[in-house]
Length: 178
Image (cartoon, rainbow, N blue to C red):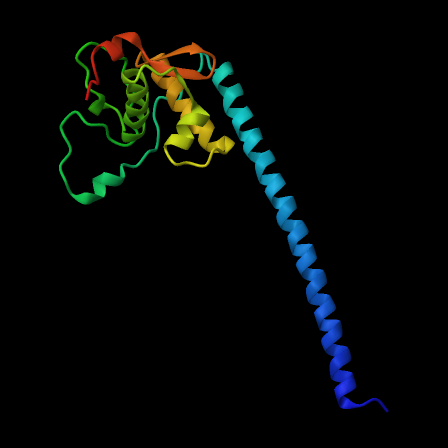
């Protein structure tokens, strides 16, 4: 008859093997999940691009955005012409201040204004995402690209080369706009 200690050791060894096997399976599933999430993000980006191309007005159907203003919770009253969540990006015109745009758009304009002031070239959305402290993952980069394209369509930015953005000459000549 086997000893009690021997039986416990056998069961402990069996449990340890099962735990190791389950950990390996969990690691494999985590890796598979990460790949699937990246693939899903790429399909979502492709879908947005197709929607933009297929839109009857040339891709400017997404005029509104759900961008909550984190400073709104502070209780300070905003200037009368400041942007509210879901506000539209107006077409640029002389005398229009940056404050009519949401914080995200103002941040893009400020980054490109700084580049223009330092006589540096245009920026890609990937470079902007790194500047803003965001992960340079496709979802974040595409969100920035969408905003930058919207600013180009409204005359705030220029796109001298595909995917490279800078302030539009008229907006840059104004010297900041905010």
